[in-house]
Length: 351
Image (cartoon, rainbow, N blue to C red; front, side, top):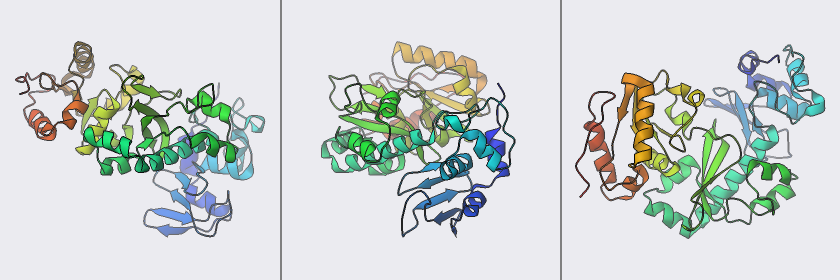
């Protein structure tokens, strides 16, 4: 099926110029532009345009996306017609104005409405966390403080706010259920969980919830394709730390590491292509047989660029190490002791 090079379309149509051509008066603020959003009535600018990432986001109505998304929303047209309005050739077989919500080939699998739903959930959960003492105490017990809460936009689902918000703003509850935000009975799927979103270009692209009640399933993610958590944090870095779980990742963020998480022990080869040009990859997997076996397999596939960092005996994972009083000191000592690439260093049992 013919496809469209979306990145080339965005290069040919600078987003700030296209938005300005639709009557939006933009003012430059450093590397960004701000203006009044054309998608809702407002007196004070809440629309922010990011030329570096070729994207826009409204902090008022949560509209977001790239230049194609903007044109589709502003002109109320489909993907193919938006390309025509941008002066780009639209090949046969891509989505037309009769299918305004369906993703076309080479587009992000998230539609504009999907992004708005995720943005709403992320914002609501973030505000709920800041008011929930129990969830904040839990994070503090895991060594995760407010700087990481703000940087990663961590949240908490109280099970009350999302559904009324979506209904009030006329978002599809069925689509929210398909994405994994609502259960079949209409209740919030992530209720009672600390929520860790994956942010791409400042927007929420996915999220996973960690239950505070240990008797429940520990982690529950959305039904959308599972990403590499922290991808943008490691992109372009010469040394990358790769770990397994969401709280392992948050521990690394708290220590200012270029770190990402596979959200499991294995990931498909195509999801790991971003590591192809990384000179050094430090693998910090769980300290059990499954985790260590997966780490060795990944190290073998990476070759001489890989380093295996084995946590001290008695420490389950990086998140558990981060919750200990001397966790940060211990971790950076182990990093300093790493041997030649591809070799595992053995450590004495934890005291």
